[in-house]
Length: 454
Image (cartoon, rainbow, N blue to C red; front, side):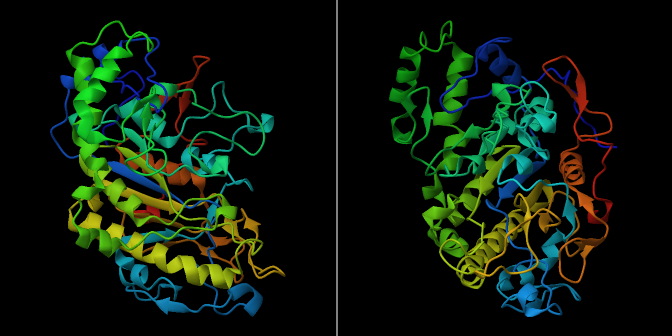
């Protein structure tokens, strides 16, 4: 079994949250940085990139086409043969189909609620409502648990970064917001383990305790501004390790990772151009540069990167029918994701990086009267790649109309067990302690990794 770290491990990653330094209690920021400086990792590490598709993508027009179903179920588009014999995807995904050997699809995911909340994707659980039985402080996200158990990434890098743009519909953001009930934020791992959040565009609108970090060329003046604010943030002096930690943000690998101007234009062109989504969705733009940013953050040593791509709540009550929306948005998704997976593979990163692509639920088998598909938590398709997973596989089969698993339902907690396993964390043993002092396992009911993916 892979080596893992328990909640009692010495290394605990400091957290720098936009608008909050998270320095209260426990070791000082300087002490934590000093510990990390003495335990810098010199080898490559396992990482996870979680790509959230806000609104719940359609499985029929992507990875689970139903060509033999009636027209009101199969939709307007036909399947095409992928690179892997016997596996077919929607004709609007030709680039992904051409590299189908680099990823696998779980077609029978279950365990999600009918809630437009990114929280389900980031934690694997429902939250916010009394009936959810959340512990005090709320469930922590996957990246928060990784941050607590494994600490900083290589070279002392921040372990958990949310690279999603700010979205107008708040429950889509990675901030523990819900449709109903109390926010589940920061989760019982605490503020120091929530993601370092890049809000808005990649290099702008990033604020740390009121200090504008959008102009990276003014690093020294920013450091002086940070020092002058030491009383406000209740830090007893700026020593070498605090200076080092701040420099990691403003002049180290983190700042360089966020500087997309360093990317050759040919690579940026290869990923494709930005396509805005209709504002009425409240989701994310289709920004291929965010895939580049995710790759650069992984290269810099971040353990877990989350991002959001597009707006997928395709009822046909906004912008157009599912036929129109699929034709407009799926080609951009197809190109950006396919190039991302190829880019990781070409750089030798895919074997070390687990990629998961999913939304909060699937879509109804039957197209509604307006020409769209409604919410459907009965099943959905999930793309997984890298990190030691085998490509070119299909896990589970849905029924003739794509509504429920015909065989091998895969619970969302099995997906999380797979992600933890790929980072070397044994979910049968590893535990974290909630705010009441109760040790908790990372997944429920002894769920195990999806064996068919290995």
